[in-house]
Length: 249
Image (cartoon, rainbow, N blue to C red):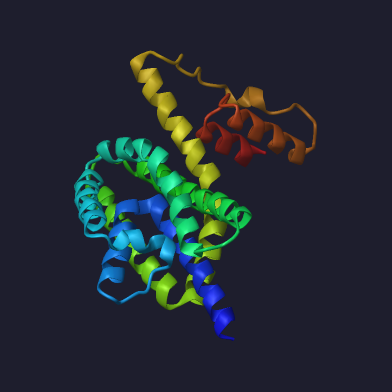
């Protein structure tokens, strides 16, 4: 029974460190390092490096830097873009460290899963932040940034103290991410297209006469809706035009 509980704890910690790395890598490293060095948590051998004072100091300095950079609209998205090449590999490495001494094959598998989890949480954070930055006021940006920091600390605490609860939360998170990421991606493409139109890098979309998009007498709304969805995905029509055509069908 103890071995079973230990295995669940390792799975929870592995998921926790990789998920948190995709959102706030330095906050995750700082929390784990302080928890380990104060004796509140016994870190696996692969993560004991986080208890080193130099690592804690570096993580703390970078956390403070990210804390302020993350509150400035535009700067936060640039920071996220740069950290695409940092958070994901770090998430894979921390996941490997969390499983401890295992076979090389299991280490590679853990690194792949950890990197994938870090990539998912990072993409969700970066995409959501980019969408929020379209708002002229900064308060939503600040609130979202603080909520992300709180989620990282609360999530790691749950991963260490309530493994089953944290694993259940991760299942819900991935279900939401699968549903949300395609919508975020369409929003990001729309934002960059508008920026390109303003800068003259992209030809401005010509308004579509919605009446021309409707069939004369097909009577097959299902196939027509599928066609409209393809037009929307190809950016041949806008979201508003798509909604208008769908409602008229």
